Amino acid sequence: MDTNRLPASAFGAPAVLLSGPVDHEMYRNFRSQLDAAVERDLVVVELTTLGGDPEVARMMGEDIRFNTDLSPNRRFVFLGKAAIYSAGTTFMSFFARPNRYLTRGTRLMIHERKLAKEIKLNGPLTTCVASVKAALHEIECSIEIQNEGFANLVRDSQVSLDEVLRRAPENWYIEAERAQELGLIEAVL
Image (cartoon, rainbow, N blue to C red; front, side, top):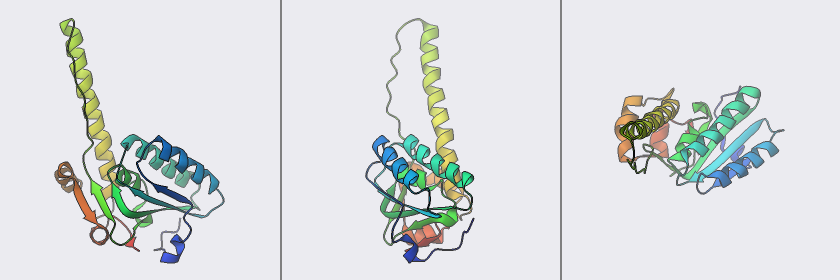
């Protein structure tokens, strides 16, 4: 696979254009455009998002990973514009670092996954213990998935996983040029 830095002209006609919340509607739109780009050797995926569903971002990312593995002669490149927050950053993490680009002034935002859940305990004590353990397991599994994404994001960069884990609870915003300095992306256009 070619990993040479691409000129700005390579981004003139992206194969996949996405904007808005990362949700199931975006996923359908993504798949439709990705499937239509089957003949392209260079597949640019352009995204602007304020975030959304991290599991949808992972599905889209797995499609990129899978297609990259299936077609090693094709190049799948991410282009972030304006805002790449939360689930958008998760999606970007599935692209190899040499295939990540941002436009000038774009901001990445990295944060921990959020959970809003009420646990209602009502019934036999063993059932109550099982309900609490199930909620704890959900949280622990979500943390593992979140940290796998963080590890993908910082691979081959100057950012340690520990730094992301320290800064993510506070919503870490990174401007495009700083993301390049840190090695999180290949270049700023």
